[in-house]
Structure formats: structure tokens, C-alpha cells
Length: 306
Image 1 (cartoon, rainbow, N blue to C red):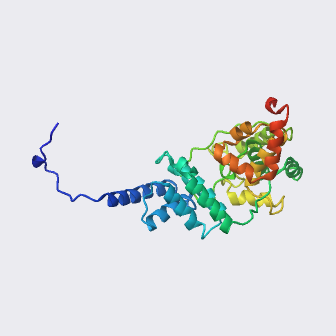
Image 2 (cartoon, one colour):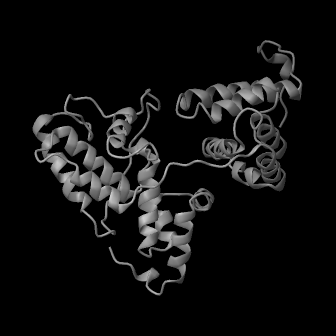
């Protein structure tokens, strides 16, 4: 098939060099990604986009780009944070670049990051995981005649603990982020033989439906506002010292499941972790690691019933 370009009425444009095409595409993709993840990933994806633009690198990940990014960012923040940033970057770039996770795992990137940790790493001070005793303590501290906000807090606390939820799945962020968030489907099962989280959830629903029968939001405070992260953390810290934070619910629930002998695969599925993320999570929580090792060797580990 041939075309006669002489009859075309299209205006003439000078062709671009390949370098310019790559650079302009990087800028266009950068703006598209940045808008869809405004605020939510400002510490991770946006830092990568800024790095690529300021160094005139294509946004498409390569082993060189990721390794350079790791070295550069490790000069300003802890290498452990850079490791977490790379995980977030992969999660958000994967729809655009399907091979991004393989690039993240390549020896050049992993060894570069390991070297940065050896050079600039420091000990990790993580908030401790909540325990079943902590949950019982929180219930015991509830007033004899609880307010609506008391019902709300306990329902969220037990739901997050038993369903291995991130705090961001329970509360509204302090600054509005993803306008296209569609919510989560959560299955709550009491494996731990503690206070049944469903009872506290049902008590909250009765209070909520009485006060706000026409409101669509699931979680609502007594004043009609959606609970924020700051609100929940303040309530949490009235019960526990500063060594407990929002992530303590998720890590505590996972640890408690491991301690009763649930297999790592079931805990991973319950917490909706990807394989790589879950392994990294275990390594950074010695209590959970020891419990999981025990669970693998326990004769009843694969026969736990709900």
C-alpha cells in the first residue's frame, strides 16, 4: 500500500529527535500520574517524578534509573524509607509499565539499596503491635454508658485489629486525597477468641442509624463528621503510650493470628499483602517472625477453623 503525501493538507511539522520524544512523553506521563495520585503518594511517586524531570531521565523505570534514585534519595532520607518509596512507586507505575517490579528486584537496584543501608542506615524504631490484652484493656476502659463516639472508636479499633486493616481504610485522611476511592470489602472473623468484634460493630451501627438514618457514610462521629486519622490517633493515645500508632492495629492483628498457629499464607491473604511486601513486613517484626516460624512447625497450623 502506498500513500501520496503530496496531496495531504496536513501542516508540515519538523520531526523531533528521539531524545525529545522520550523527554516530552515523560513530562506528559508525569502530569497524568501526578494528578491521579495527588497527596496520597506525594512522598513516593511524586519524588520519583521530580527526580526524573530534574535529572532529565525518562520516567519509564530502568535498573539505572531506580539505582540512581536510591543513591540520590538516600542522601536526604533514611534508606529504609527509600525502600518503602520504591514499593509505592512500583504499585502506581505498574499499570503503565508492567515490568516495573522485575526492574525493582534486579541485582543492580537491590545491591545499590543494600549499600546505601550499610552506609547511611540506622536502627528502626517502630511502634509496637497491639496485643489482645491491649484490646481487652480498651474495652474495659469504655464508659458504663458509652457515647456514640465511644461506640465508633471501639468498633473501628476491633475491626482494624481483627480484619488487619490499615488505618487509612478506617478513617478519612487529614487532607483530602483520592477522589476516586471506591472503598474496601472487609470480612471480619473472630479467630482470636477475644471480644467478638461483630458485637461492637453492631452496637455502633445501632447508634449510627439512630443518629444519622439518611447519611451514606459508614463511619460517622457524633457531630456528623467523618472520623479523621488525627481523631482516631488521639483517642488511641488516651489509652496507650506513644509507642502505639495507627499501624499497631494491623501488625497486632497479624501477630495475634500467627501466635495461635495460623499459617503465613492465610495471614498474607487476610491482610491482602503482596508476596514481597509481606516478607519484608515479617523481617521487620521479630515477634511476628518467631510466631510464624512456630506456626510452620505446629502440627495443627493448617487446621485452624474460624
